[in-house]
Amino acid sequence: MKTLKIITVIMIGLLSACSRAPEPIQYGKDACTHCRMTIMDKRFAAEIVTAKGKVFKFDAAECMADFLKEKPEIATNENSIFLVSDFNHPGQFVDARKSFFLNDNSLTSPMGGNLAAFSSENSAKELQKDKSARIYNWGLLLKSR
Image (cartoon, rainbow, N blue to C red; front, side, top):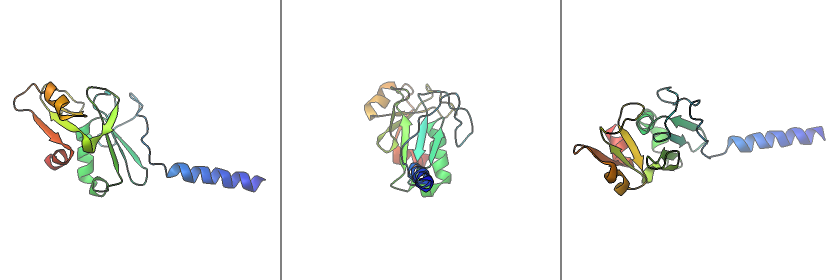
């Protein structure tokens, strides 16, 4: 009976270690993987779940993009999950690969990159205030960093 309990505990541990699900960000407690600042603003947060299930949390999309520049093996892995908070719906995460990113001086992101993510290009255009502001898709954003 004792052996069965030990085996059950080990199996549960192994199964949970293989999970590939995002983790909720604890705003005001979790630190950004890249810059180590405390993640505070729900409008700008981002998260990566690797193919192996490791979770990385970020206070801004620019931190996530810069982190991926340093970790191309994660950036190019099709099984990695990249999530960004939709600026219009703070705390609601969307697939970064399908998102649009507005780089506008009227936005003040935590790292000063003035970058916000949107679930649609039209949403990004609606908030575009500066004529020199740029809108990127995921691929262009990563190339621009």
